[in-house]
Length: 94
Image 1: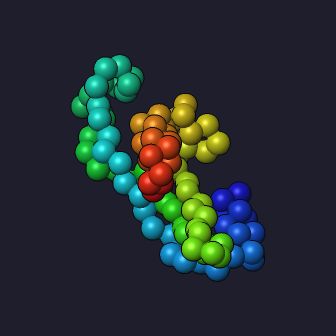
Image 2: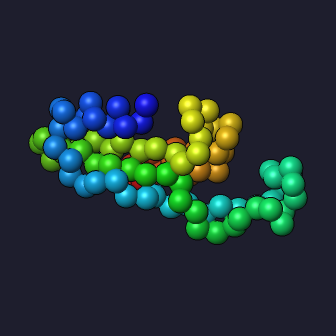
């Protein structure tokens, strides 16, 4: 589980920054919502949470979660997954 993974990391590294939400800008277009656009909440959304660990030598490890996705992040939260992955590729993870 998520908390077990965090506990394992805490046993190895010091926490540099505790759980903080990371945000993304959700867009509602196309057929993404089977109930129609009136049921889609646009704008700033909490994508999930991140905790920063100090792993030494001016480095850090970020444990990032995606809110409400379980283990199938791209299937259940595609916009949040894209935002998180794009920021990782640019070298600026949430």
